[in-house]
Amino acid sequence: MTEPERAAWTTGPGPEAVFAQRLAAGEFRIQRCAACERHVFYPRLACSHCGSVELAWVEPSGRGVVHAVSIVNRSAEKGGPYNVVLVDLAEGPRMMGRVDGVANDAIRIGQAVKARLGTGAAGEPCVVFDVDAAAGGAGSAR
Ligand SMILES: [Zn+2]
Image (tube, rainbow, N blue to C red; front, side):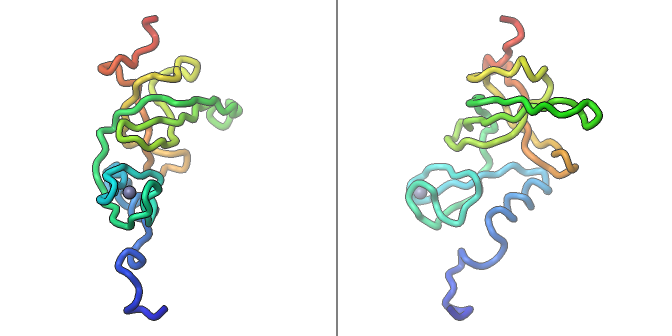
């Protein structure tokens, strides 16, 4: 295929790069399909629901619910145990992250959480979650 025949969506930075660029700029964005109106994450070239390539970047509400949690046992010298969660975003997609601000064993499936920008293990920008007390996410009182 020669250069002019290439469709617009195959040129420029890939969706993963755009996602990372937005994160670096302090913006958490996911994709929304113009054809079926559903949200898509992890970033893709084509909609995972209907195959359309008309994906636009939108700002999610940040609200979500913990679908699964696991604790990774890391030695104390390397920073101690940490949690890895799968969160079902209010918009639909499921994404991996971590919950900050609470003890690992206090994280519950079904707990309401809210996304914000944080820092990954290597100092890279990433999406992390806080317990969303306003949405009934506080589990410590029970
Ligand atoms: Zn679609």
